[in-house]
Length: 460
Image (cartoon, rainbow, N blue to C red; front, side, top):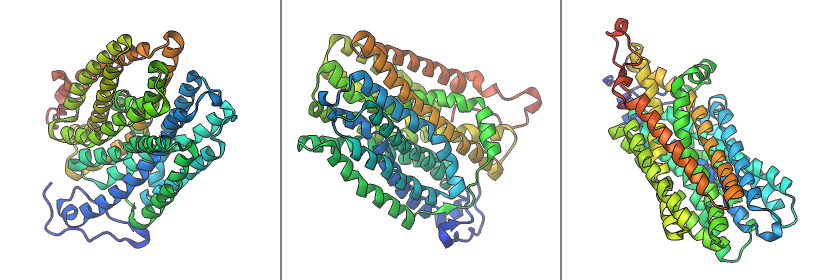
């Protein structure tokens, strides 16, 4: 849009609330908005990062749980499945908490809440504890998964549409990297012959620091308000559910594999906890680091195109995994699994970039223009992100349950990988059919609406 000659006045910071925020105004963005947005992004990433670590801490705690704990591999897969489930479900209320309490205020609360599952796990992590107790405490860790939804909703409001792919990718990637970080710390603890309580004790002060820094340096946007109508509208929109389906394939794979990788190495290939820990962090680390690149590529070439090609590559990597699993080739298996992690991270960035683009394109198709179209797109995309993020995380539940059943039935993960391959093929077909087919650009236009802007998803 054309910038006005005079930028809006700098936002009021009284009580850490910003009353006016217009990132689409280029003058405002260049003179005031970008600096504020980047600062909030930095500390949002920190809180979300620790939230991911606490959410996925059971992926490494189960590595400490030897025969003396009395848990079977099926018990461990069920435990991590339930942790993932809670993390997916709480993403919905966490999305709306930003508007209800303010992005800064909720970041303080959500970061502080991470003390509950960490201290609880510290108290019960010892042989002789019942499986039901471990399950209950594991469910508490699921609240760490909610930090992603509130952080993404908050940061989505701070950045203009042209910067969302990069900003959301960096925000999510910085959060996702909490998975390999806790796995690396676990590797160091195991290598030093330390116990699981050492790992948990390390994170307690980190949680406190994240909450304090959010209080000191983040802001609330008064312009972000809960819109029940937007939530209902986004839930009724077919694209919300299509993108949820695609996000299961990318983020569901990332979080599911993050929980399961170490266990698969132990159960199928007989690795010790230390041997498993040496490699489990590599995939989540690379997948997290590449997520911003997925968002950047989507900004440059179109999210639908990057997502489509990414699913082709994910299918190929999964086919190699099936072969490696059947041949019992550990080096090939680990290499292909790491590649699949990387591709899931790339796809996370490209699929999430598609969301604001889709709703902005729909606003243009309705005849809205300029600020009105941008506001309409932000309204629906912000509401849909929490739902899409929650449904996508459910993919992690499915992956762990698929591994559990595959090992119970066949003693290996091969059957689960076949299931994943079929799902990626379906994601490829849906992406092409809905967002890249030549006729897709015409699906929401009619002869009576020829004067309205043409809706094209090719650049989404």
